[in-house]
Image (cartoon, rainbow, N blue to C red; front, side):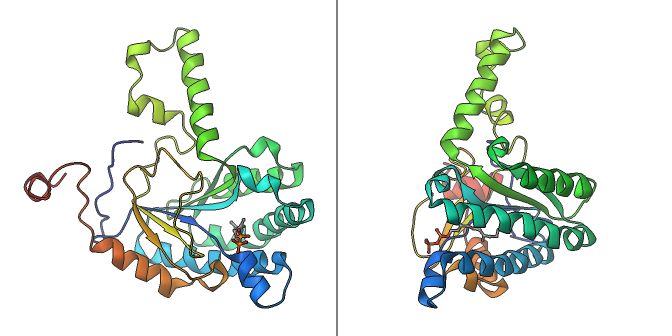
Length: 252
Ligand code: FPP
C-alpha cells in the first residue's frame, strides 16, 4: 500500500515494517580467509537473531532481501550454493518459525527458482499461513524495477479486460498489484555492509522509509544492532511532505 499507514505500533514508536538489505557476507568471509559461501552460511544466524528480535520488539512485518534479480549474474557456483542454502535453511528453520507464530511469505520472480526450492517455499507458506505473529517476507529473485513492470502489466491487463477504468488507476490501486500488495510500506530500511544505496529493493514501497546504514557486515549483525536501528527510528518525526507543525497538530 502506498499511503504511509505506519506511524507507531501498539508498543510505542516501533516501526510496523522493517526491511533489510543484508550485505557484507562475502567480505566477512574474505576477511576470515573463507570462501564466500561461508559468509552466506554465517548470515543465516543473523537472520535468526533478527527475526527473534523483531518479534520480541513488536515489529509486525520484516522483509529481507535474500537474493536480487541482479544476483543471478554471480558465478554459477555461488548461485547454486545460495539456492541450496535457502533450501536447507527452510528445512531447518520452518518448524521453529511456526512454533513462534511467524507467518512466512516470499516475493520475487519465484518461477525462476529450482523446483526443490519452490516446494520448500510453498510448504513454508502453507504451514505458517494461519500464524498471527511477525510476518516474515523473504525476497528472492526480486528487483524493484521488475516489480513495477509486473504490476504495470497486471494493471494494463485489468484495463484491457474491462475490469478497471484508466481513470481508476491511482496509487492505492497500482500498489495492490505490486509484490507487497496491501502490506503497509516499510517504515525503516536497514542496510548492513557499509554501502549507502537501495540497490533496486522495493523501489515503490520505500518512498517514505527512514534509512539506516551500518558498516557492520551481515554475519555480525545481531539483536543489539537491530535495537540501534530501532532507536534511530524512534527519534524520527515522519512528516510525509507536511511541516513539523502540521504533524504535531494532526498527527499525520
Ligand atoms: C549479500 O552479501 C548477501 C546475499 C546476496 C545473500 C543473503 C543471504 C543470506 C543472508 C542467507 C540466509 C537468508 C535467508 C533468508 C535464509 P554479499 O555476498 O553481496 O556480500 P559482499 O558485498 O561482502 O560481497
